[in-house]
Length: 499
Image 1 (cartoon, helix red, strand yellow):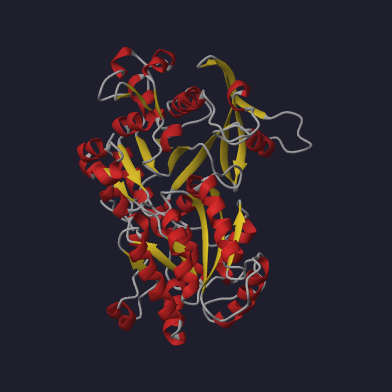
Image 2 (spheres, helix red, strand yellow):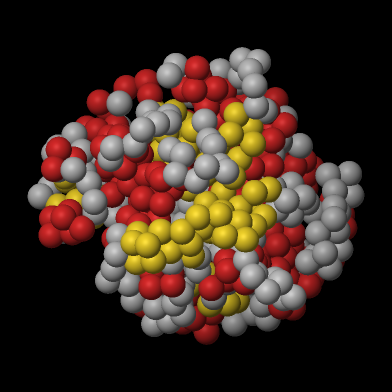
């Protein structure tokens, strides 16, 4: 599941790692980054790594560290001026593991989401909010808080990407190794040159090998230049971002980092995502009791206002965006319905796409059902009751949706890119004969390719024994955090020992 990283870390003393992320389940989530940041501490604990998570002090996070009945939080440190704002470092727990929170009211005590206001408009000072967060992370990682000591810092995405740059350029007495993870290269945190004087970095940081990027400040770019190692969330995506098509302008930098760039596929939490014990389902089931899924299909049909039937029920849980290939899915809905399929979709995003999906549902009453928004329980029900889950992403660094589908026997239909290519085995003749096929893959996101993949899926679904074989193979696949945890632990150990 990884490139360039040995799976068995060398025996050594327990490593102390600071994970710096702008979101983490179960406290705050907008996407897959939160799932990974929330899962890593437990995934790494069996491999000799003690991970502490650092989060911004959003209202939702503060409510978790200030439970009812506790008069005062545990304050470990304070800053008179963290890029101009007073701030405190609070202690708590997340999933039974240590949590640190940067409580800076002027930066994070806001209504809305982590990055935008209640109307969905990005905060104009996001650069300052997350630069301050990264500066705090660098302070903590390098010993500013006497009670805390870390061997390595792991920064996630552009919101935390200045952490390795601060460690590299600012005058800290003690530097520590750093890892920078790209969860999606499309989001880079690029701002104008006018913010540089306010970052608290020395003049030498303003360079092509530092934070400067096309005449402005590139936050993700700064982290990729400064970190000791770079990871991304699947081996195929680690190769793809070396190309112009997927590198989003940073492919040259990724190429220059050579073998310090690693691909480690994400895992899933198989306690939260376990069809045998999932309370969101009408009828829990296992690989040995697949017929019980029928009750979930009936419940899903009712929830989405679909005609009941034994034909294939396709499901979608996605952001409604160009990246996710939702425009091409819109083109294919008439074909999907015309060959006997039905569609249940949960998602939100582009307003024009939302309207077009509603129009498709009106055009095909009882055959297409749409829910705009996101609901965690409903996403579980879609995986537990759907026959096949459509993931036609144009690019997908890793993807978790298809992993949930595999675990739930909801057969993934995916574009052959990024983590989708690494985790789904196409149901070609050889794979079917070997009993290893777990889904349907197609090449390139356009009408004819997706329509053909949907037709293949309908044909496979019409062969009950073959379909059950594909479901069982997917459900038996191990996409827990075990292998990924070992790979991260091995990388950490190698970097620490190289000091």
